[in-house]
Amino acid sequence: MEFSIKQGSPEKLHSGCAVVGVFEGGKLSGAAQALDRASKHHLGGILARGDMSGKPASTLLLHNVPGIAAERVLLVGLGNPKEATDKSALEILRATFRALQATQTKDAALFCCGDLGRDAVWAAKQAVLVAAETAYRPDSQKSKPEKPGQLKSVALVTPDKPAAALKAALDQAAAIARGMGLTKTLGNLPPNICTPTYLAAQARALAKAHKTIETTVLEEKDMQKLGMGSLLSVTSGSAQPAKLITLEYGGGGKKQKPVVLVGKGITFDSGGISLKPGAEMDEMKYDMSGAGSVLGVLQAVAEMKLPLNVVGVIPACENLPSGTATKPGDIVTSMSGQTIEILNTDAEGRLILCDALTYAAKFDPDVVVDIATLTGACVIALGHVTSGLLSNRDDLAKELLAAGEQVYDRAWQLPLYEEYQPQLDSNFADMQNIGGRAGGTITSPPPASCRASPRITAGRTSTSPAPPGNPAKKKAQPGGPCRC
Ligand code: ZN
Ligand code: MN
Image (cartoon, rainbow, N blue to C red):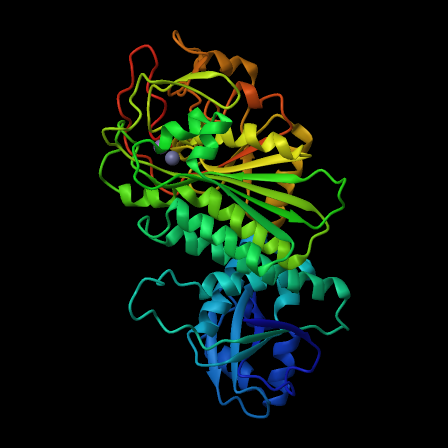
């Protein structure tokens, strides 16, 4: 979908559909008033019949409005602008694009972005993101995918000459929307297609499409040489080869320390020998959403040509039971040289991420952001509304929380106090991989070796409702409902 900024009067601008707002109580916005005058009060007559009250996110599509250039008019309820919030503005935009995509119009002119009671740049960015979100269909595997909507181009019409900031916001939002699309598509693909090898191919494709990205893929034998015993213990039950994927984007100077993004890439999490219950196990294909996010971000960063160095590190494998699978009670040695007693094979995310984080140190990062569906306990704590965020650097945590508020994709910080550490004490190894039900998310980030490094762990809430827990060893209480 193409986005542009236009100037023009509502009644004269040619388009398939002019979108204008109506405030609470049926009060017409400025652009709607212009259409009303040009059409000899056609709009006023419709409002008088009571079909559009201006209730937020209500819509009414009008055909054959006389005296205007647009083929259709979409009236959108804006509510009371004094009570507008980010949430209500987004609901209005969603209703707008759903209504547009239900028509056969190929293009639309939005006159309502300035009436949302929000900053113009924010509204423009969100319009692009919402347009992509409402057009997205997870049907790539249907033999006859649903026909994509007809809407191909959207103009945001502003009364004033558009500022450069607004144009830049549109381009950035379009790149972000395409990155989010890639992330969603990877997440929705079935686990027999979206394997670790498939993720590696995606990373290579990004390098092919963008000269600024270089992709490296380590195989299991390379990981063995590096001593990644923790990561390899998770893949040992699977026939699919594990991959450690690295994408390096060089948009900054040679001396600039990179931002390293680490993404959990479990392409299917059965729980392993600590098998999950069968209900909703299909959703465990989403356990690679951290990896999908890293790929989406790298693509967006390259498209935006950000003047930064950004590295993506993706440990990718399956977690399956078999005769060669890791057993509860096994002790493995991580790349950092520490031994880990695996009490529950379903707590595997931390086992792959700890080796990926140790590996990430070789890039001498400025910051590390770790993105993972880690853990079901996070959903129990925060529900499906917000992501959990854990960090050993408060300044960075504040920046990420603020960024989340800015784009209305919010996170909530959980503590990482030292007092939680003893929950991971093991009788037989340097640590164990589960810390009990209490504070199950807080004890899930890869511990100890990584604590000293400059990093932040953003634990995305799992997409699935948490199934009941597997009984773990008595001395270690079960580590929350779903360990991931
Ligand atoms: Zn998992
Ligand atoms: Mn798991």
